[in-house]
Length: 324
Image 1 (cartoon, rainbow, N blue to C red):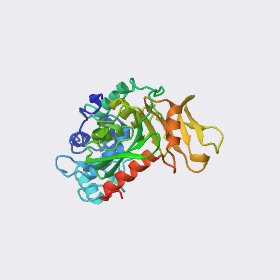
Image 2 (image 1 turned 60 degrees about the vertical axis):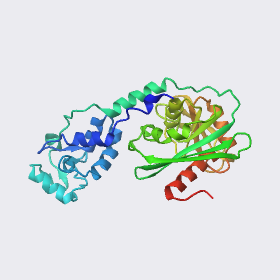
Image 3 (image 1 turned 135 degrees about the vertical axis):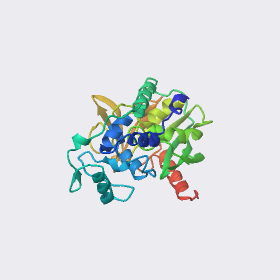
Image 4 (image 1 turned 90 degrees about the vertical axis):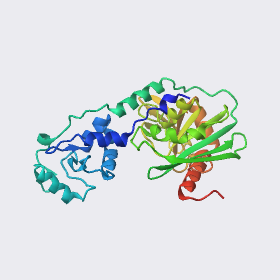
C-alpha cells in the first residue's frame, strides 16, 4: 500500500475558512477566487457549501464572498438582504442584487499553500505506478465496493463474490466521518481513508470492482485507478455515466469501445445490447478486455452484481437497515 495517498490529506474546510478570513473590510472576493486559492477552480461549489456552513461569521466574513458575476449569493448570517446591508456599510456599492465595479473591489491576493495543487501532484505521482496489463493468476473472487453518505458521515461496503460460482462469500461494512469534502476529480482523497479497513486481508487473487471510473477519465486515472495503485490491488472501474471519451461501434452491440484521443480507455456495456450501458474500464492491474469480461460475467441487471450489491449494502447501512 502506498501510504502517501492516505496521509497528509489537508483539512480543506479549515483552509477555506482561513482564506476567507483574509478578505479585508471594503473588499469582496468570489467563490471561484477562493477555489483558485485552494488550487483548483473545480472547488467552487465546495466553497459555496463551506460558506453556507460557516458558524464563525466574525472571524470568517463570508458576507464578503460573492458570485463571479457580482451576484450577492446567499448568506448564512441572515440571508441576502442582510448581506447587502452589511456590504454597503463597508463601502461596497450594490445595484439590484449585484456588486458594482467588481474588479475594483475584488480581493484575490491570498496567502495560500494551494492544497489542491499538492493533491494533484500526488495523483500524478501515483499514476506512474498504473498497470493496464492482464492479471495472470487464476481469479478467486471479485469484491464490489461502494460508499453511501449521510451528509459528511459515510458508510462503506464491500460484497465479495466467488469468481467461479458467483455465490456471495462475504460482506463488510464500515462507517466513519469523511474528513475531505466532495470536490470533482479529488474523490479518491475523500473515499480512500473510508475504505481502508475494507481492503485489509483480501486474497491476492481477488479483483476489486469499484463504483467509479478507472481509465475513463480525462487523465486516465479515476478513483478506481487511484484505489488500485494505492492498495496495490487489481481493480476495475464501473460507472453509470460517461465522464469523457467517445463511444464507438455499432449500436445494439453489448460492448462498444470508448476512445479518447484515439486510444481505447474502456467499454460501454449492456447485457444483450439492450438498455442503458454501464461504463467499464481498467482500474489497475488488469487489461481493458479483462475488465470487460469480468464485468459482463457478473451482469444480471444493468449494474454488475459486485458493485450493485455493494451499493445496496451501503445504502441499507445508511438508512439503518440490515440485509435480509
